Structures are given as structure tokens and as C-alpha cells.
Amino acid sequence: MRVVTPVLLALLLASAALAVTVSVPQAPTGRPTGSPAAASSPDAAPASPPASPTESAPPQPAPRAYPRLPADPAAIASQLAAAEAALRSADTPTGLLGELGHRQQVTYRRLAADPALAARVRSFLPVRWQGVMDRHVAARREFLAMHRGGRRPAVVPAWRIIPPEPAADLLRYYREASAATGNPWEVLAAINLVETGMGRIDGVSVADARGPMQFLPTTWAEPGIGKGDIRDPEDAIHAAARYLVRRGGLRDIRRGLWGYNNSRHYVRAVLLYAELLRMDPAAFTGLYHWEIHYASSAGDLWLPVGYSQSRPLAVATYLERFPASAPP
Image (cartoon, rainbow, N blue to C red):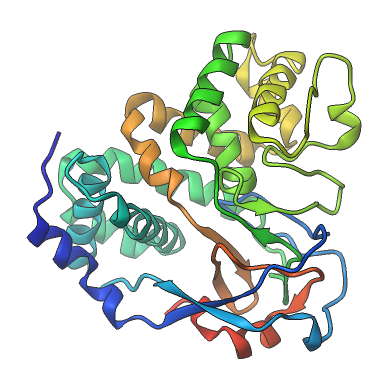
């Protein structure tokens, strides 16, 4: 395991001090009704019209900021390599993992959208991390392809963004569900990631899917699928494993994933993240600390934990109040 020194961590995180602090609305009471999309590619527009500006609660400051990337490809590569090493190092303070994971995520989202920049950054990246980058960028590009040609939404969704379950608990749920059904735990983790950011998105889709694994209530009610609470992470992860079996996932995992989302891009993206975890289980730490980003008409908005809307809100209105949610 590579050791990351305090000096290297300080250099890696120095740019965060230049960023603007994010403020997010207080969470209202009651259940949101929005349109969750895959957390790795939240490009779907909410079905409801924009809410009145009076819908938003007073903002509260948060200590985190939207990561800023260097302009120079070599500097991006150096920063990315340091983040990858730090996310795998037992010497990295727990309190820094959130910023490191978010920086990793923002870097790969940027590189996926800019092939020329990605090629230059990869040329400077140590060989150890080139395969990791390749899988991250390829997975993100599959989600971009799902929505290519579509109009990006001009509203932010009616979601609550909540903290995920502890990482150790999620890993236990994945592995127990894998042992019970034969589905790889890495596939279950990848589904949880792309559907709701490992449970960060609390919302109801336009198709009425809900919970951390985004089940339709009708599917949940099928005999042998849903047991317990559709919104409980442990119950939902076990139900997802049973659903993959029902859809033929043990014979061909692609068939099972196609049942989850009828898109070849979705299937390939989930399998890329699963392959990354299979080859490098320590990559889970970075994925666990990814934030919710929403591809809107105003760019790649960051919706931090604490974001809450009971109805969709116009992007322009949202950014008037919370400009630091926009990419720097």
C-alpha cells in the first residue's frame, strides 16, 4: 500500500481553500416527489413544473466546496494520482476522504466530457492508475451516451440528499446478499452507486421508483423480491440481488442488469464499475465518497448533503441562491 505523506495531502487539498463555500437549504418535513436518475449520470428532467421561489428554505453554510481542477494536464494527472493513492492509504485521515473522493469524481467527470484533455492527462498519469482512469472514464461516457442529444433540464429535482449508510455496513449488505444469491457483490455496489449515490438520493422517480436501489412498488411486491422496507438499504440491496436472479442474472449478468434498466449503456457502465471493484476492492473508498452531481442546463451542479426540495425548482432560481453549486 502506498503511503501518502501529510505534505502531499496538503498540496492535494490546497486548491479547496480557494473555492467558495457551498450553502444548502434546510430539509423540509414530508417526502419529496422528484425524478432520481443514475447518480453517475443524473441527466433526466423532473416531471413537475418549477416551484415558486418561496419553496426554498433559508440556506445553511456547509464547510465543503466544489473541487477546482488545475488548468495544466500534468498538474491534473499529479493531483489525480495523489488522490487515488490517498484514498487507498491507511494513513489518510478519515476526515479528508470526503474531499478526496469528491475531487476524484469531479476529475473523472471532466475527463469523460473532454476526450482531448483525457488523453493528455493519461499520458502524464503513472501506469499504476491508467487502467483505473480508463474504467472510470469509460463508465461515465456510457451514461453520457444514454442522454446524448437530449435537452438538459432547466429545473433541479425534488430530492433530499442525505448521508449514506456507513461504508462498512453497505459492504456487509452487498456481501451477505451476494452469498445468499450468487450475484457478485461488486455488481450490487455498482447498482447502488449509479442509482442513488449509495443511498444519498432520497426521492421518487417519474416512474414511481423509490429507495436506495430504486424499486417500483409493483416490482417490490412480487413474490420473492421485496421483503421489509423499500427505503431501507439492507432490505433493498437484498431485494436487488433477488431481482437479478429472477431476471436471469446468474446465467448472464447482462440479462439481469437489462431488467434493471433497458439500456446497453447502463449495463456496460455498471459492469465497468463492478470490474473496477473486482480488480481493486480498495476503489470502493473513493466511490463511497462521491457526491451527487446533476447535469443541468447550467452545467454539472453539485447537490450536497442537506439539499432538499419538496418540489422541482428552476435552475436559475436555485443558482441565484446557491451559486457555489455550479462548477467553478
